[in-house]
Amino acid sequence: MLFHRKQKKRVVNQTLEQFGLSEKRKDKVLHLSGGLMRRLQIARALMIPKPVILLDEPTLGIDIAMKVEIWDHIKEIVRENPISVVLATNDMAEAERLGDRIGFIKNGTLVAEGTLKEIKKLSEKNFLEIHVKAIPPSLTTILTDYNINIDNDEQLITVAYDESCKIPCIISQISEICEIYEINTRSPRLEDVFIEITKSQPNNHKTS
Image (cartoon, rainbow, N blue to C red; front, top):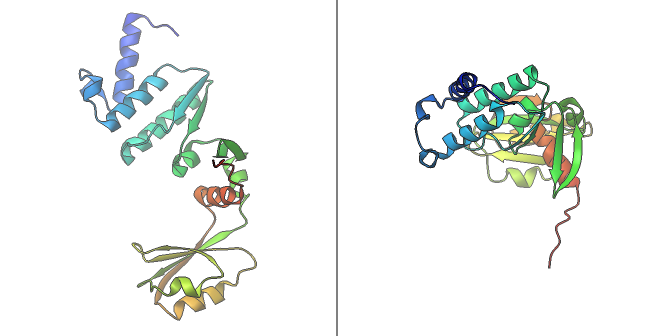
């Protein structure tokens, strides 16, 4: 795509404004911070719509406010132009927000692919979130039969369960050793499904 000089200037100014780079327009690239450098790279990639755009961890090192703006800008470009964006990311929130179709890769092999709804259906587990006053060290020795995750900062115990698990029994065991003040259940998040699927896949790394 070719632009006339005036049109080119307008597109450049508009792109700089969209990515919060207007004030840095006269700065040398080498003097930009890591976050600003990342913004500039994305701006260059998205400035001129192409049939296919490849983005590799586009918002790595960018603050959350600018990250959300970039997400919205990518969605707007895809909505208004006949293009496809292939995005590689370790940020599950980013994949969930932007992906029409999502694929999980382990050791260079595609192990799952589908829409967000289809991907989440691959997990048969739900999650029990139990907030307690304090997490005792003995907790892990009591709940040995369950897949649990402990967040000591948030005083949160997360238990993955399926239809075979007896939730009242889990709650009873925890209440015997610590005080519970809130209990919630939730469906699997994308990162939960990713961990579950990739754990079940064989590790193909060769050792010498």
